[in-house]
Length: 238
Image 1 (spheres, rainbow, N blue to C red):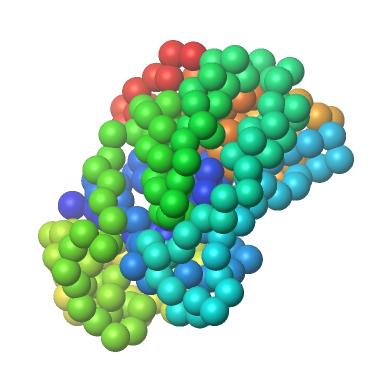
Image 2: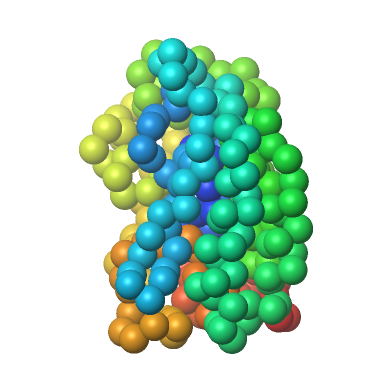
């Protein structure tokens, strides 16, 4: 059984969803420490002047060390602001109407915790892409370990995984020998194979953008610009 583990991010880029689509079980690593100025509460979309941030305001003052699933959202009308930015910059995209109404509905929700925002959007985007991978939160299971590698390995063992698929940045810290000793094979994603896709503005912006940029521009053809085999995904038919 192949498994991947990653922190829950806000409207993630296409590599995040490829990682989900290429495994049997995907674990949202939600009970580890929240990191500021990271992808947990923000991501980028594309405008005429280039990429820019959509950031969810969250409560962090005096809360050093809080876990991701403990982070609360500040209620300052951010949903309306984010939706308006998306609408203004993508309303002329070929497939904006295919996803826009459902995305608009997501932004009508009131959220107390950041984890609920991220889960809501991740699950909906998986639905659009036809990704059927089982997704659970690490807070739902009991695992052990002191180091980052030990914790990840413990989750793999609890879930019965024989293969762990990770993003390439984990090469900097993952103790591969530990996994080998415990009969869990480690593989890494190769994002260098990504092809450029049509975008609204001139040229191609290679900087990682939220996957909604790809969906609005390519619709059901988005699968051609992902690494997920077509047999692993349903057509979005949009």
